[in-house]
Length: 186
Image 1 (tube, one colour):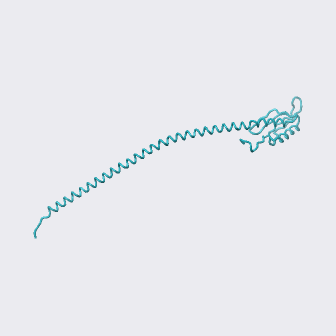
Image 2 (cartoon, rainbow, N blue to C red; image 1 turned 180 degrees about the vertical axis):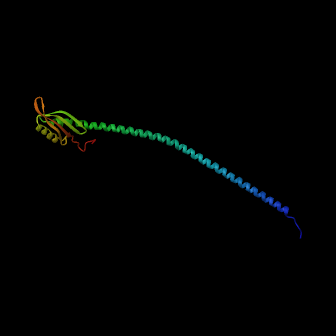
């Protein structure tokens, strides 16, 4: 049997395999590095694009916020104008009511009754004055109650007094105005 020394061949084989392994390892490391770089570039591009979109959305939101503020200002101005218009309409509706009120009051005052002052608080009238007697005050109240402009009246004060040397009754009558359900503003 012949003896062949295979050590140099095996050493060469081992060196060749080691060189191939290192080349494969280097190619793998290089491929992985390239993949990481490509992934980083792609993710950076995606992030940059999203940041651009966010910036665009932020500017649009700011513009819409300004428009919303303008709309709210316009709505507040509209509400103020509507309130003014309602006041004007209410005054227009109530303008003939005061004429009717004074007409009904004048028709309800009997002879011998003098109205010294009339004051109004919302829809209630307060009448103060003098009458020749308590019976005339009673007649006055009945005529007020009979009027379709007034609700039932109440006598606050009726006391005997003297006026220009005559006996008289001083009165204070509270009478609410009749407010129909179908009247505007009520």
